[in-house]
Image 1 (cartoon, rainbow, N blue to C red):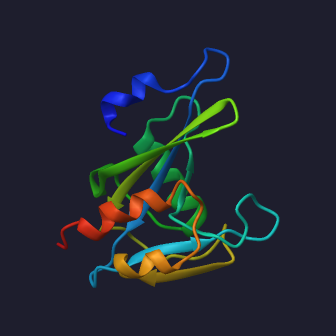
Image 2 (tube, rainbow, N blue to C red; image 1 turned 120 degrees about the vertical axis):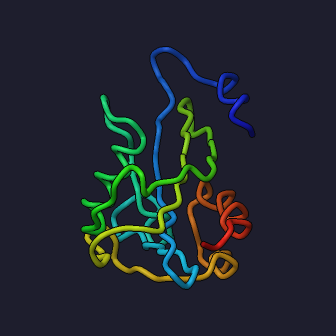
Length: 148
């Protein structure tokens, strides 16, 4: 799906798409941080990119900055975020749009506040991790992402 296709998603006025943001935090060795969903949550035990829902009144980058602070204790500036790719999924009557950003600069050391584990892997190794279906199509863009 391309950005042009976003206007053709199956949405209704009473059930607008759910916008979700995520970050591929990439360290100096080209590894990406993943976190595992804790028991009791949807997709428990699956590995995902850190992030979450965009709240009313927030822009995607504002939401991601907030989520990275809440989930990992990291400080990130909007200039540190680069749009990478997106994926969509229809879950019942609701469309979910997941926007993935890359981030190579942050302040602080990540702490698993909202996950039961974290790991760093090079993008080609991420395919080995069990992930929620919406995260899987994002991997190919990370494999092709140029290292800085």
